[in-house]
Length: 268
Image (cartoon, rainbow, N blue to C red):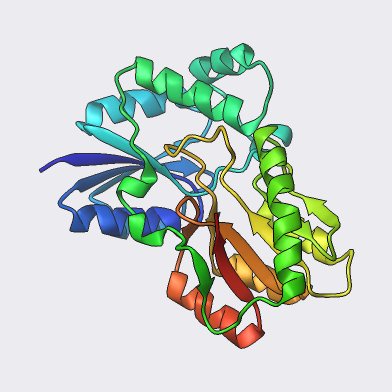
């Protein structure tokens, strides 16, 4: 039986990846990244080691000793850990940080992936395991789009892609053909809250796959928390890049959106 290595951050995605991988015949050897992972993940994997996110050398050694032929990354690893000095890097991590040209998402993650690859660890796309979570094209659920909503989406999509191309963020909030908020280091939910606070309800949230992004890490992901944040802010549309955005608990998300009058749409 093949062993799948799982680098697990916070949120529900590591649980879903583990469940799907075991259905596919993998044994799952998980490394839970402290302080992000929940101890309850232990019930859903074949083996769990909890290692501090800054101990890159230990993580590499543990993965190599696990017998995992392939490894996948799942769950949130907020970059604010760096800005708030919550990472205590070991020598390997410290040397990697010194090599960074900047501290953008892509630069950090590609540097990590490259180091793991040099050590013989093969990363695969998370969508190889959870393709069923990918957003389909078109409106999902009972709520449709009106002309103004569509105009805002058409206005916002190229802007979101331009911002993504600069590796600033994956999400923007638009209202009446004006940008209310751009996601930066604070993350999607905080960007939604900020954007919604600047208009009188009816905001459009657009989340895209960054043009230079790698499907092995940081695939755009939304879930129930995203919908709850939109409900609190009075947002009316969640536009997701179809085929390249993951919807965690898709059925529950759609049900919540239907009840709240929110439209979810997969765009290309």
